[in-house]
Length: 368
Image (cartoon, rainbow, N blue to C red; front, top):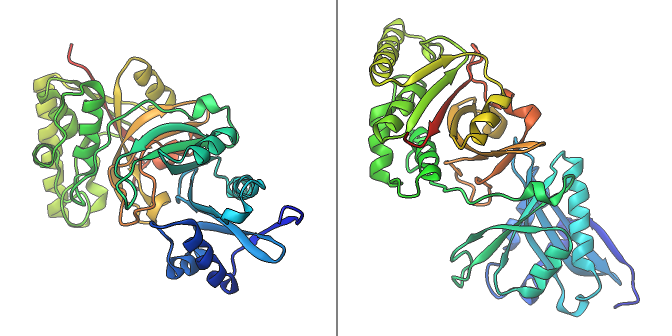
């Protein structure tokens, strides 16, 4: 087979049977089903390419993209055992990198079994760097290394420090989840539990912020952090009340104003600063440089088209990107939710909510 050129193309329906046979030859567990192959073949968030030599399917690679971010994920790659050593995996990855860049996605991530030394060596040769680990990731309970490559930037800019992550346990507790991550980044002994999550929600929530359960208020989150012996201040570019635009009922608006006024009074009493100014990304960078943690409200429109307010924690900023931990990975188990890269140009747009273009963040520091 070494004498035959390798050609790459998108997967078509006629290729599925051959791909399934290849999947069985290459893997004993964690296999893609024919149904999932057909789904990814036409899914708008996927790039699914195969390699042929001498008319035979000898490899494939599958890339998944996350909406609203600069991130892609090499979800699966396989090369026929009889065709290994011909550089097919590198050609497939190179093609996916090209397709990722055409989509404006300059980051690629992957998982690889910790005992797959040959694959790890290949990925390192291709410019991937380890930034984390998943314990018990595969069906056989083995661990997976997490690796990333910045397709346009120096590799040094793609590395991340360890940052705690917590998955919100309800649809309405993104604020407490983000705050717990921020506090634990400053003090590893901070409590990250469902009990703490719900306790903070009861302390920090407003009422009628959107339909359904109330959402966490920035001043409420700052007060919760202050009660746990952290320094805390609130940044917002609009005067209180912030969230009356989300409801139509005049009665409900009056209740929101009452709750927000009460939060402001508690903040004055406790010495929690509320700063109203048009803060910029440079202010976030300064806070991070001073060792602070930053929890920020974003609009989820870029992710799911729902325009819902959502709290995240900022894990880092570099010359190209702002990185966030999202406490809600959603229903898709393949979506990335840690150190999600957002372009600097996009960040303030994503961090703007509602008709009034509200921007608000909670800045947390260790106790004095």
